[in-house]
Image (cartoon, rainbow, N blue to C red):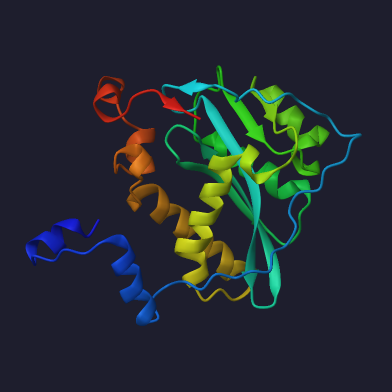
Length: 230
């Protein structure tokens, strides 16, 4: 994003050197080590197969990946439910809650459903957390004809795109905000998602933004991206 300005000023610098400069000037976001547990899996809940292995995507709204992450506000934790389109990396649904109950995930899913006019052929992928296995959540997916896919071991590497988006939203946006209370944090999340979707380029998208890829015209797809491996 700053390449044109650097070229204009005849500046040449590698990534590692740039990070050294940012670090020496206190401009890097500090990494917080302690984490809140967000996945609780129980055997008596619904289980579904992993439908994403070997899948290849050719457009938006073919695969949504979901996850929950914590957001620190002072000494407390809030919980952010995110749903991301795997092809475009666009966050299509989100909700910030005080607790880990299923209502936050359902609110995020309802938002995601409001962004598309068709769910034909759509797969929803998540871990086996109790929120995603609940009868209310799975019933909402089935009501819209969405196929349900779940990780088999509830390991982070089983849902890599969702985990990656979690890290970007927190590490590049929320961790730099001075969040105070639930309402302030919700506004921070709204702003972070809007900036991420509309302004943040991805190398995997050939430096396009999630919005650009998500809403691209069919005749432009081959110019901007080829089939994507999950």
